[in-house]
Image (cartoon, rainbow, N blue to C red; front, side, top):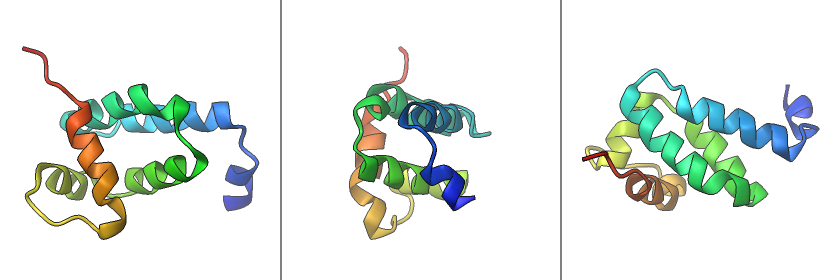
Length: 92
């Protein structure tokens, strides 16, 4: 599977990551991750795509706790999670 992903064209990878970000199962995470994906994925570096993909592999409950500050996030995710937390502005 890893070899198949390595050969995946960037455009397809970005679309796949956006779809995963917008369809998580927990609506709050759909909104938060989806907002960031729409704003940043197209211009993200390969390293940023790799990190975002790793974040998407985490459980929604863990992600929500990390983003809201209810629990400490793994160090490698801290900067991205901070960015994710500010990317979504709820409708008024």
